Amino acid sequence: MVPNLSFWHVGVFLIYPAAIALGFWLLYTVIRLAVRRGLRQHQEWLESRAEPGNAAP
Image 1 (tube, one colour):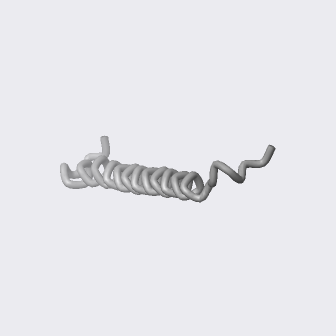
Image 2 (cartoon, rainbow, N blue to C red; image 1 turned 120 degrees about the vertical axis):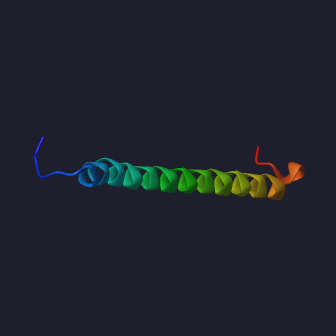
Image 3 (tube, rainbow, N blue to C red; image 1 turned 135 degrees about the vertical axis):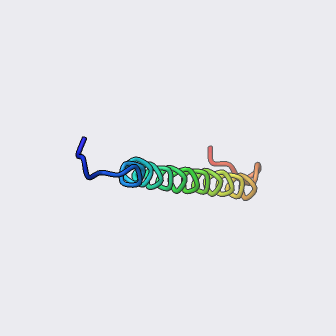
């Protein structure tokens, strides 16, 4: 290890990338859940508009 590297620097090199990765993972999770919810609501909306008597043969 580099002799001029203090404990603070080692912590920054380990924690900073981990915090960025955690932020990206949380962002991915929020977007994924929002898309799933939106698709589910859209599917429910489509199903509510379907009328049983007007189905195509």
